[in-house]
Image (tube, rainbow, N blue to C red; front, side, top):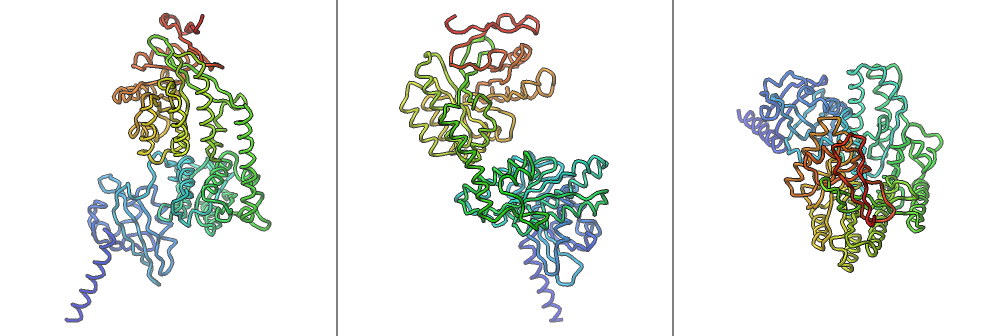
Length: 574
């Protein structure tokens, strides 16, 4: 009797330790069926302990996590302990319950011990829905680039799993998918996503993303690159596909570059963009072909030679960019923003051109190579110089990238210039663009507020195209908000798009900011916008870009004419 009491106390002690670290304990057999459950089963799943026994574990998970959990559990050997991972349980009432899953397999046992501990979704490290590719549950290209860049931010601890980036291209994947049923295609993409998430999931400190239809990236230890490649290739056999998945992979180990963390981040992002656009061939051009005798996930070059290849390419791009900046190849054009009721010009947006072309790719490159501040500062300086001789009623709006707003050195330099020219107050505006991500929003609020107090209005550009737009408008103070032109272009042919525009305009009115519609190109758009209460517009209906800043009003008195009508342009001095 005494021995039984001791054993019972020992069992209670073990249960106490278990529940100190988990809310729900389970035993799962080799077929993924629950053989035992104890704990907060009702709260987490909606089923009692007894009701869970005999159910498949996968049936308790959201569909996107079933393949991932199966792979995690199958990978455990004797005395194997899995790294805790955030997963999502599907409650009986339909709710999603976020938990951390942990698992252990005792020596020689066919049974897995699995635990779930509920956590707040905000603490689980799971990406927001807008950052997830729906077919694979991997990160979108933009989200992966942010996570990859953040992994080597100076001053932050760097997880060892993020020292290397493996880029994988599957050239025959599109052809394979065209012959599959919708169900088989969904299963294929889910299984592929599970492989990347297994090795690049939140619990390991690594990240994985889908960069194009058949291109993927994962930041994980170099030692896992070959395993990832083999597992992807094995999927074809497991699913009974007619042909194997051809995987062409390259691994870049940033630890071997011999560069600072800031430069490593820039070079990795540079390679990532090249790969997303043109595949592994573009990466090979940067760092050379895989070493002889290698197959699968070739590690590109020795550390220093790989770094040298990247540096050579980056330095060449940087030299060309600096040559453009210093060689008068950057020019400015000016597009008027007009009052939609009166047709009177309110201000002009300053747009940059490199060698006469739109600067999109140049801006991306400048951000990757860390010189976007130089571009923004040069445009600001040229705009200030134009205002020195422009008529007193000319107001210019200059674009500032989020990267520049986040730079203490840039903002201090800009503040010094505007304080030295108090006559620019009310005549120089700044448009914050979403080409980069602002991290410290409280700091951004302070520095942008300082500009506003100096008399320089602030405008949020391209509102509506990214989740960051809503974060910015929620956290920062703006005087104007520009509705992205993609909505304006479709609002007259789509009730959905018109409803979105109407909602954004209502939001602007509620916040007390002036709305500006981009890409207004025909009278019907102008009339719809005016009817919805939009105050100002910009687009080729009014004027294309001008080589010098000048007043350009438009006569809107004849808007009742047919759609072929064009407004009469009234230039200053005529």
